[in-house]
Length: 640
Image 1: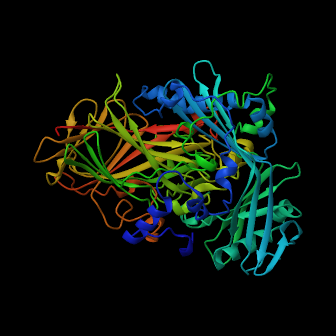
Image 2: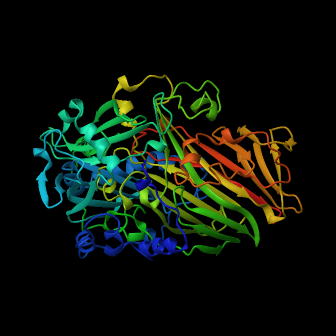
Image 3: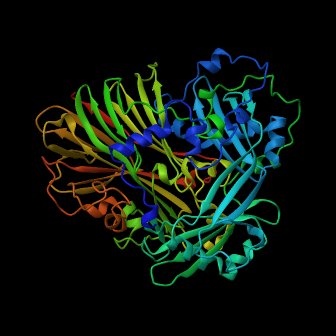
């Protein structure tokens, strides 16, 4: 990643600009135009609801998005992991939706479980892709370009995803019947890709002049997927910073959308092509693949069933098929909590929280998401020893990304606030939800048109409850690079998981703000007070506690066998105090929070705590796109 690519810190002026760009309520044409493409007539073209459809029933209008305490933790995980595919299949049984999806060359799907036994589902896709390249006043057809003709002069690729349509459905979770449906009219979606600086252009010139690359692109419609991201990429035996991914979307011989994935050594004065892989399948069980296995019977129900109301559709395919954004106030006082959030820079939104008028934590954020491919067997090791056995920046597997969560690197960031009313199983509360398509265009115009190899698809949620429970959660919906490894056995060098995620959350515990913090550790048998910085693996009985040394306030964080924690003193040279990527030195030296454990005294001191959530994606039924994996934490507040 070059300086031109770096997301800059958001000062007070830029923060206001950022908030203004999102606006209030649903994203409209003005906000979307700033997100990377043409939106002419998008609102009317996409939202021409069928006339004379039935009004939604009370069951539909009274449904809300399910929070992590509406069902037990296991069922919450299973809803996201299993119901998404079933809901897609049910929606595709609708004949007109099926006919539409069967013609797509690329697609995207989204899901939200609702109360009242309803699933909200959407699928969207496009039938073709055209690319027109321009250099100054010259316009040319990329299918007629020869090797060497993409030069260091500025070239812009104007991409059109043709006839995108969105199908929305509401599914009965008990009977798997469709109870609401809508299909938008087709529209073209446009965006630009190009080489934003001299370094990018030189890298692409090198790559496009390689015979093993050009043979896939020559005579075809193609465009560059510019992801100069070596600072967050670890590849083979190279530390992150030495290798960059460079990729190209193209139309293949069968009329489908494919991608050429390459990795280039950029550590020296000249470049070296390390790998070229053609990827024809971006996800496992795409809507097109599911549709090809079906033969719907019966009449279409479009017009006979209610149109799903906007707030009952998946939140990441709201109006126009893009995100449904309703930005909440930056300060929220509700359910005994006072919460302030700051817009994302490179590590998701940053949250401060008070409970019952007294402080709980500061600067909490999902700082990094390491995504590892082709790992060795774990053999009982903790995540630091497993991912980085030499205790340095070289990954033990084949490919690793430390993902970035920012508006400029896929975004959009904050989607909105969802209220959790009191029920028989939990008190009232609320959720802040954020979303990131890391690596996609801002607001993911490309991603939502099915051009979604590589960029990741995350919900990062913050759920607060009146009884003093805070639940951070990370939800991954793919696709990533996993199909490279699933479909090409020659890519595998190791016997461990094909893919494994970690989610690193950092925060400053401030229980009651009584001054310095006492740190306690329950090891399953007794409470201890570790004198020095530590790194602990969880099990079903491990608890880390942060206590007010001058009062009764405590924060308990239970750890199971999918969680670890690092507790260290703050250091201005370390990630957790420094902003990721913006501080290049800190970023290039960062690989795991456990690297910061250096023996400093922690009792009655300010500390930085890192909660590590593990996500074994390979355990989901379809670990690329059609399944959502949930990693869920819990903070229990007492003494307030």
